[in-house]
Length: 356
Image (cartoon, one colour):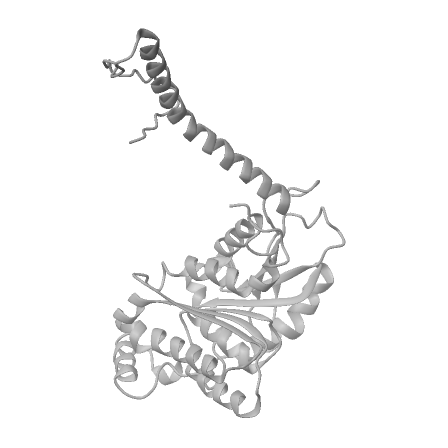
């Protein structure tokens, strides 16, 4: 059995009696062989470590270490925009690729991420790191949500932004009965939750107003992806069918609006193709949580993906993942990472292959 030893430690071989039955010279040869073998065992881990370090350097040089490139993505100061029909501003965050300043003629695909500052750092970190390893192309990341200074209290606005008129919490039956009981205890009426939602207006704001404005400031390619989780996932599925072709790639995390199931059926009745790359993910533990189950987080999300798959659209690339032992929160980083790799798999084929 081979053994490795930490750097800086000294190994002292045990005293052994040579098993060679030959002459004294044979004994010396035997001992020398044994010593060489032991030295090689100590050196192998060092050699492997050196190789890994070398590979990391090569990977960085191939992807982002061009002259004048930043070490990581550049997060810009927050901007404010007000959508038509709104009485409050949205905070817009932009992160540029590491090579953005070094390659002034290059245009970059764009990833639009819902929930603004809450998920922005995580999304940018994964996108930048995967790009450095040539897993995905370099991206411009745009995060849109309520102003950061409002804190978690501002999350109430995401219901207005991410649910379009006609949305439903759940279908009639035990799920909706549970939600009615729980919400009435804290003074909310379930039927009033979606009374003033503006998901349709918010989607139009992203596509028709914000995108052209940002395209004037930043070098955006005509390649747009949309990512959302929970209510953001429901919004992403809605966007797929409410504005077909507005985005090229979709990452849907743990959430599907019941309205999206209706829109999916209506779309299928009139179309024989759906050109898009879509990743759908959820955590299996979400099915063990009463509020999550009442909103059919797992079952409707999976049903939505299954219906898309069964349409057999020739230009649809779809992958669905149900993650073991993951809940509504700790499944999120995995969905982002796996989702990025899946929806950009075609673009990654044009990159230099990862070295490790």
